[in-house]
Amino acid sequence: MKARSFFFGALCMLMMGATFTACSDDDDDNRKNDEGSQVELPNQRVYILNEGSYQQNNAGITFYNPTLSSPIIEDIFFKQNNAKLGDTGQDMIEYNDFIYVAMYGSSYVTKLNEACVEQARYNFTSEQGQPRYLTAENGKLYVTLSSGHVARLDAHTLAFEKMVAVGKNPEQLLEEDGKLYVVNSGFGKDNRLSIIDLKTFDQAEQVEIFQNPEKILEANDKIFIQGYGGDYPNYTYPVVIYDRATRTYQEIGKGTHMAEYNDVVYVIYSETDWTTGTSTHTLYSYNARTGQKNNHPFLQMPEELKNRTLYMLSINPDNGEFYIGSSDFTTNGDIYRFNADGTLKEKFASGGVSPRKAVFID
Image (cartoon, rainbow, N blue to C red; front, side, top):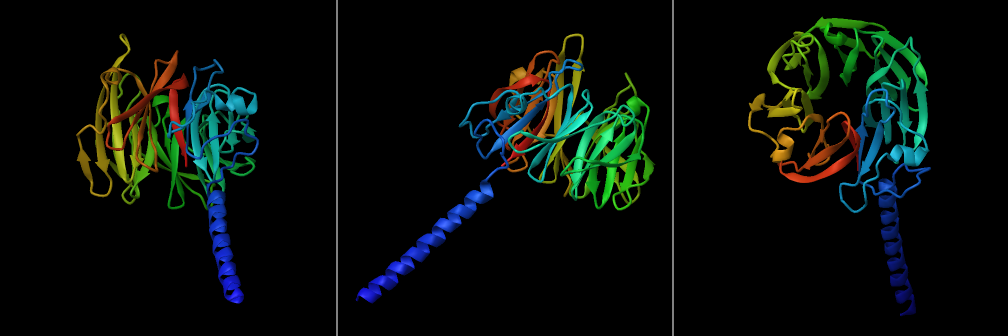
């Protein structure tokens, strides 16, 4: 009897041990890369990059908890690093559990952990140019530069490796099937899409598209490009699908902002009367799987937002929630958070001037 009791007791202990081990493994899976953090942060995080005002050294990153269980932290970069982020925050991405930020005015790229503690920094020379936009692939960070080049950095150390000439004033870029696709605005004068083979990274092919392109994204293996369509003031704001096989493109509408979620591209076309500072917005979506355009607005905008200047459209890749940033270019902006069905969930202060980009950590 005692032997039987011992057997069942040992079995129970083994089962409890397995349970504790599983819980411990779960904790390890959810543990964030927070070394050096001055504050305790939840697992779910949204970071808002506030561009700031040019040459005012007032760019910053705001922390927001989407579960609403902890307060917003304005300028968390300063809190964590005891230093200002710098001048003109241009782009921010997440890659391999780290955050990368391109600072256009301050001419550097920084690598942060998931708590916004700085890990490394690369300062570009005046000959290399100022950083614009970022993408990462296979341990490399690619940066468009105002000098007309794309730079390749080691994503771990931020050591500079090489740069390739593309077009004038390259803007956004993306990787697709081992190639980089880079749009060149040329300050309104360029009309080329540059294509770089990442295996060689030595020369860019050039394909003529429309004038003054700015943004590029991928949905269902299709490439979407948005831009101005001309130099100032002759803007037409085309949004096109680029066909990689034929190297041609087809316009699907007008747009000033676009973002992708679950192979659907969401577009906002904003027209602003700069004499009054008021805007009107047209919203539509395009399903990249079916090729169908839906002209029904995907957001139920509150009245106060309908006439404000929109500066940011970001979508949470985990749940499809929309984050819309507004700006008057001088005072702190606001963020409007919408559910995936387009209903307004919350409005909160962005914590800085001109909110430009959101990165989601889960």
